[in-house]
Amino acid sequence: MRRRRLLPSAASLRRLVQLGFLAAFVVLILWTRFQPGSQTIGAPVRFFFLIDPLILVATWLAAHAVPQAALWALATIALTVVFGRVFCGWVCPLGTVHALASRLLRRKADHKRRDHWSRWQLTKYYLLAGLLAGAVFGLHWACLFDPLVWLTRSTVTALLPGAQWAVEEGSTAIYQADPGIGWLRLTAVSEPIYGFFRDHVFAVPKQAFLGGWIMLALFVAAVLANAYRPRFWCRYLCPLGALLGVFAWRPLVRRKLESESCNHCDVCAMACHGAATEAPGDQWKAAECFGCMNCTKSCRRDSLRFGLVLPWRRDIGEDRVDLSKRALLGAAVGGVVLVSGVRISPQGRGRTFHPALIRPPGSLPEAEFLRRCTSCGLCMKACPTGGLQPSVFEAGLEGLWTPRLVPQVGYCDYNCVLCSQVCPTGAIEPLTLEKKRTIKMGLAAFDVTRCIPYAYGRDCMVCEEHCPVPEKAIYSLEVEVQDRKGQPKKIKRPYVDPDKCTGCGVCENVCPYRDRPGIRVSSANETRNPDNQPILPGGEDDPYA
Image (cartoon, rainbow, N blue to C red; front, side, top):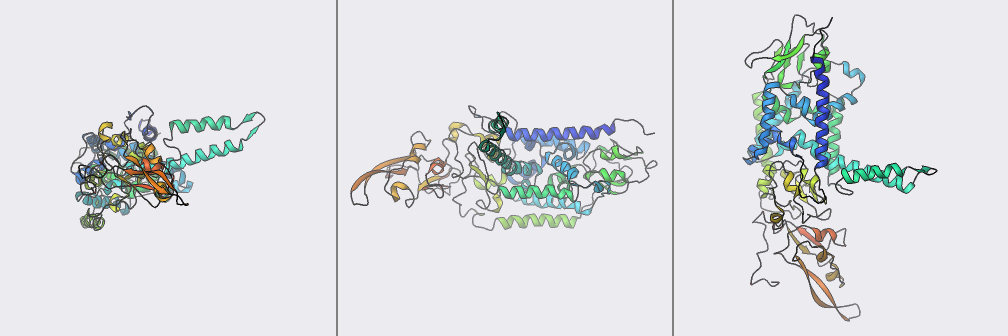
């Protein structure tokens, strides 16, 4: 008869903990939004990033500095040294998504298949080596592959906008059709639901992100890969898992095998999330174990249990991950070659400046910004106008998916500093409202071939009316023009005062031209970049002073 013990319940407890952390992740993402009447986000929305060791290590290597709060990631490392990769099996929200997908996508017959360790699982270690080698030379791409960053970016730029579209369009269709039976109307249910999502879930009406379909496609591909192998991403590609695997080489709490009672039935391999064993009941690799406890729960002979083992001892049936030094060196060289590849362009070397690369207020100088920015998307989620969008090629390959302001989509609110509050690595410095209002993100300029007063001789002062600067960065002068009959008439033509313009993008956002505005903001004159300053401060020689 099987002995009664508490360990089987550990697997059930693990599932509850996983769902709890996934729920916390979703709640914190939804909390990352502008709240009317408040200029702060009180919730710890950066929590998962601050306990992520890969962000800590990559930022330290790339920028040679990390925020003090990020040292909480050392607690995750300490947890790994003691218990192994329990972060992957119990905490990581993306790991939970993959675990759920593996359970849903696999056929019933697949659950009876032995799933042993494969040398392809070494791929994540070599990927980690290449990414960290690149980080030494300032390339912060390690965080592009970080699971917490990836899930946040995918949720912010693809999953939430997709859900928002479905809710908004669905409720609109119901409202227009007004279906019902007699006096009972479906809108009595749909409208309160829509109102709740509008007021408490979706921050910006009809929010959308440039390149969001790419994020969605990558996320869906990663989820569908679980149909081929359970937790495919976690086993083969996750660099955070590889980093934790290094610290879990010989954890204090390890699996123990009672060889005299084990009959090598290999039932434990059917339930193993990490494919941590290389042979039936033998050659267990601590660095690949997620601590899911499925093996102890599935063993009918009580041959497996987890217990304290001294670091210098190797228990029966235990094995280690054998990495090729030649492959590690090749991966590191590949990381350095990647750095040279993204830096060979003139923009990569700081010789040219993309006019559409308007960074959020408080952003560090571009080189330092790229060494710190994780491309997580929290600043984009916090932006109350939806103006912060992911870069594609505007910042070069090195700045892939980093934030930039797109004024036609949304402007930088004059009374908002939320993006500087949520940045987990300090790529955007914390700002007070007074400091933010003195920062120049770019410079507005009129296109006289499209601006209505210049091109058509008609009054239009929408940009001036909406300029949020108290002394108005956009002003008008009365000039005399001729109509089509040659008769003189007076109109007001707008001008930009470069000393007062902050590049917030309100003028471009409200311009009556929606296809290509008659006034456009570029990155010129940005405070953070002394080499991109075409306009000197006004003085005696200023014709508009």
